[in-house]
Image (cartoon, rainbow, N blue to C red; front, side, top):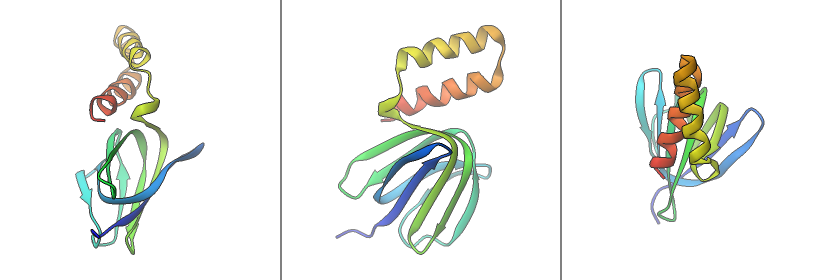
Length: 124
C-alpha cells in the first residue's frame, strides 16, 4: 500500500472533502506547494487557486479555494478555506457569466474568484 496522508478541506460554512491522499497541490503566498506523506511540518497562507488532491484510490479531486490557511503535521493536512467548492459542484456557465460581469464591472476580486472556479473545473 502506498503511503497516505489524511486530508481535511474545510470552508467557513462546511466540510468540503475528507479522505486519504498521496499528494495535495495548493497555491500559497510563497508559491505552489505539493504535500506528500512524510512532508516536513508546515503552516501556510492559501492564495485563491485550484487545489488538487490525488486520492489513495488513484482518483483526483479538484476544488476552487479562495483564501485561508493550510497546516501539515503527523501526516494530517488541514486546508481551512474562507470559501471552497469542489469542481463537480461548479456550474461552468454560471461561472463564465460571473467572469464576464466582473470584467465589465472592473471588479478584480470577483474576476479572480470566477477565474479560479473555471480553472478548477478545467483541472478536474
